[in-house]
Length: 434
Image (cartoon, rainbow, N blue to C red; front, side):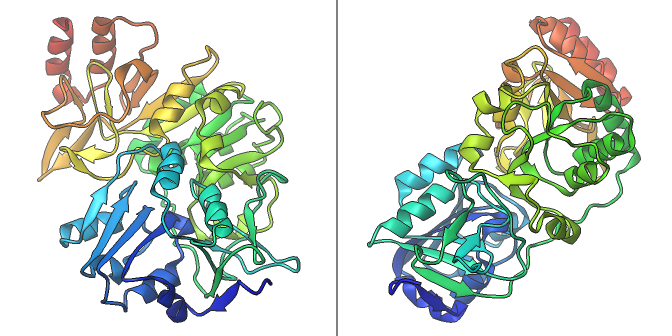
């Protein structure tokens, strides 16, 4: 350890934060949780700007006077903080855009979670590479800034692709090591519903043997992974922003070889992982899965270089033009953009690739059935992914293949997969579509 590296408790580490300061934490599983919880004991902030996304827990620091939280992706914690009156602002950006945004903001303290150092001093960045790796390295090299790693034996040791992308920091290079005992937050993996299985069954024929897969979070991607794990297909590859419990099940079933993909052949590639405790135990010291920065994993040129790239993503709503709303509800921020647009757009660059946007045809609002497919998006709606980038839309009533269709043909195809209670109205609007 160099003379400059200090090992501190979470409480002692909070002293490095000035009353007026800036701090960056990674998305979700990369958050240094014990440090953030300890920071909540402070009440002397004049202006503390915290940059992050998808908090895995509620931290008292975000309701302290003088604290401003700038989030690039909302989860349950962010939505709770907003409803509680905390000073939370959404920063519109896809996940890939977090990298230049962090560089431009240049927070004085850049932090992350990681594993305890090995015999050579290397601390694995565990479940998150994301957008913060380069900024952590810049902060470590700048004497005016602080690079902080919170370590815990509860985090799995994972790997990058050295030498350029080691997915680890050395204790000799960082400024502060916070020793803790945190464990990763757990996302349960409940059995899929009948509706999710119905959508997954429509998606399955689009996934040939040897396809490279990207899946998002939720019941539908999990159901698709389950069908593939139990099916006759094989030789799949994984190139996914998020590594999920469903993708682990696919690997456990012997269906993943990564032999037919072009980008990083032989490895499942991701930029962060979240799921069950079983997933985290399975990832520990598993060199078949490699964690790379989001600028690489979510790069459209890298994504599209894979053979038979099949991307699977969700949506809140679509209209008959094919516009997709995936991160807001009635114009209010619900989640984030993430890699939605990148993975949908990239899979349209090659004829052999497909992007699947999967959603239930309806939802319930105040006890009333509401169609997720509308002739026109309501006023105030915010489009996540533009109509010209969308390939296939799937509901429990079928598929709408949009590639090469005119605007009227697209409207008819989308109307046909609406819920029967709303289909007559949708068909009528599609028939007179501009």
